[in-house]
Image 1 (cartoon, one colour):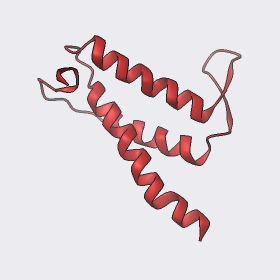
Image 2 (image 1 turned 120 degrees about the horizontal axis):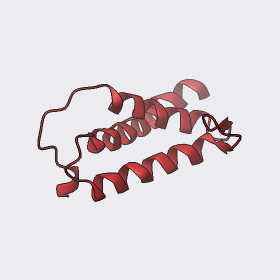
Image 3 (image 1 turned 135 degrees about the vertical axis):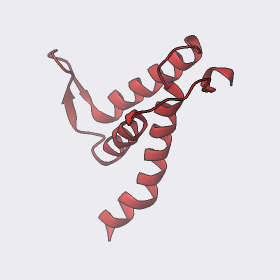
Length: 93
């Protein structure tokens, strides 16, 4: 979609950090996490799913934002796929 198209060069490591979020959700999905500065506890899998939906909605609603939402979504997908292919094979062996 046009919302995910980058019209200007971007730089940063946020896509990689989102990939790590996906790996954490897969590996420690049932662990309870406390949301920063609140007493709210949520499972890691749920928190990452909420972040993923928020990034997708932001990419669609704010297509001309200077934030690389497409990179964040790509990082999540890449982290998910790479974790599924490598992480669980090494743990189960």
